[in-house]
Image 1: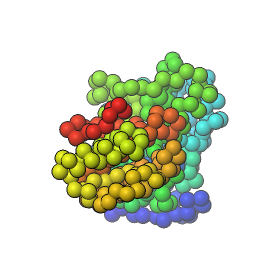
Image 2: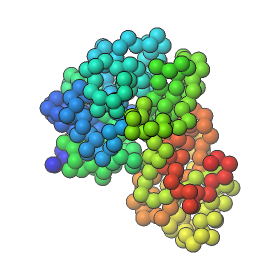
Image 3: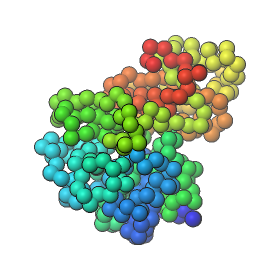
Image 4: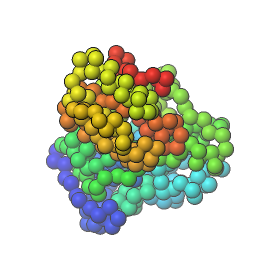
Amino acid sequence: METKVWRVDPKSPDPEAINEAAEIIRKGGLIAFPTETVYGLGANALDETAVRKIFAAKERPAWDPLIVHICNLAMLEQLVEDAPEKFTELASRFMPGPLTVVMRKKAIVPDAVTAGLPTVAVRMPNHPVALALIEAAGVPIAAPSANKFGRPSPTTAEHVLHDLAGRIDGILDAGPTQVGVESTVVDLTKTPPVILRPGGVSKERLEEVLGEVIVASRPPSDVEAGLPSPGMMPRHYAPSVPVILADGNPSELLQVIERLKSQGYEPNQIGILMPEGWLTGEEGLVIFRWGRWSNWEEMAQRLFEGLRWLERQGVSVIVAPLPPPIGLGLAIRDRLTKAASTNSATNCQGNSR
């Protein structure tokens, strides 16, 4: 399969390109498209055969559900039973935007979308290209991140091509995404509501609307019975080399680097997600300039780009400091912890473990 690429203006996409991509969606094909968070891999959410193509292209297990993207709240009526009382206020505050809400589904939603569960995850992306594609297709679009399963999520069309060229019909390339980590997923079928995946809307902002909110600490023990949300596996978002975590300060980061050197790593084998102004005298390390520490928005936007860039430099290990679990730092921390989760032999982090 040849993967076609349409380069479009992120603010005013070419209607001809949008309509061509939308026609592929209607005919059961797969289109990667930008959202404000990451690039998604879309198919008609109401066409089970098309949805299963997503799983095949990504090599994604069937127990990991998909998020359904809509372009207006009227489209929601096709997908869910009566929306919970708090949904209207959430929608007015955060939609369109990086928030996904889990609610009871209608029978029209295929089980392939929801991993066989009676709930469906729905969001309205805040990106002109995504909204135009959904509107032109005339159907809700199921879309996980447009990458191989378990890999760092794609924030550019180039990332999508690296993982999925020849596996999907096309990509709408509108440049880099803005948020850089996936949407927050909150389950409104639980009391109190549960954040199943931290993301672009912080826990603190959700609590302004919902009151008490719990963050899920682990996936269900029986994974193959179906996860309630994407992004809940202990290992996820991982590059092809180990990720080592350090506590979030320069001295702890330096200790991890020195420990790796003592284990035989050469400086040019060690990649660092380096906050601005940290360890400026270190020589020979492979450095990705991550952004200013505590500017979690910038660091989230550059996180997956950094992991993929360091991987391409041929390093043997990637070291990253962990942000605190506040604001968007919680989402960054979640992604890094999962990227590093199987590296017990070399994991050097201290109290943040």
